[in-house]
Length: 442
Ligand code: GDP
Image (cartoon, rainbow, N blue to C red; front, top):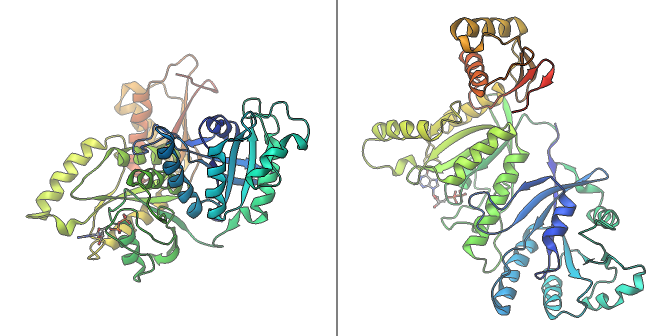
């Protein structure tokens, strides 16, 4: 299996040049992360674009541009700073109808300072026929402006050609030839992710700091546990140039968190024992379930808990089981990353979860599970068959007779029955229901 490193392309531009429309046009329906995700404090869009075999992530760092002109420049400066550190290419968006805009000149100056590759994109250029029509935009300091119309989609293919050429042929780079578990360590800033990584690898390769979102290197680490090779990419780490507001860091790290989750096979979600679960954590767990990622919950800083630890853990588990009833298969491990407590147990749970996702249940076993389920619950008497379609993660198919209207409780019951025999802890499974060979629509 190959690990793929996607490049990051960022859209920068003053308000009203059509950044959102442009973003949507480029990403289509494949928007991975949208604004409503808890913890993303501002509009910030993030999506994957694929063109002629090249895949890259597109980020619209806009959405903070409200208020007065000076504030506006400041917030754009924040966005640009993030781009400096995190983007491989910048699309500088301007408006064909507004050729001499002062703010564009400011943006151009900032981008010059950033020193990243830039493509000047002239949006709303529905009627541009000749390159000469774009002459005036060259004053911004970029020689080959590309005209597009985000609304109609005109010339976006040409632009994608230019982007792919600029990103070069290494856009998809194999990071590591052979490894077994591609693991992500995710969670809110300051919960102890870097500390955990450091303790695991036994050497200080990542910079740890008590200040949320401080400078650290994005690193790749490989190590072995229980005969399994792990690869960890610390994609959640972001660099912090100059003054970036806490909100900006927070929302950017949220984006990175979801990206890391998307790119991994298995994840450790770290929370702080004193803080408990926050809505971002439940959201992440929901996404892990939806995306079929194996996941283990690590409750960190257990060394800081005062009083009787067993009692505390008992109470916490009781509470979590209620809060997390949508992922009853989630393993929970109490750790101290700093004091190296229980980390072997944590990694063993990750290995178990990873192995669980490869589970292949023989058909005779499934037949038996179904027969037992029918015997013990009248609700599922009409299920025709239960088959496994795929592993990694496991996908099952339940067939109902014609005209049946399967209810989700029936599906859940069968999942529980499968898990009674094959617990598959730490791994979501999917159950598709088929009615007379057709997919049942709710
Ligand atoms: P990250 O932002 O999630 O990577 O968090 P860091 O690893 O930078 O840790 C944030 C702060 O929590 C640092 O001051 C760490 O020393 C501290 N910390 C991390 N893990 C533990 C732990 O298990 N126990 C205690 N007492 N402190 C911890």
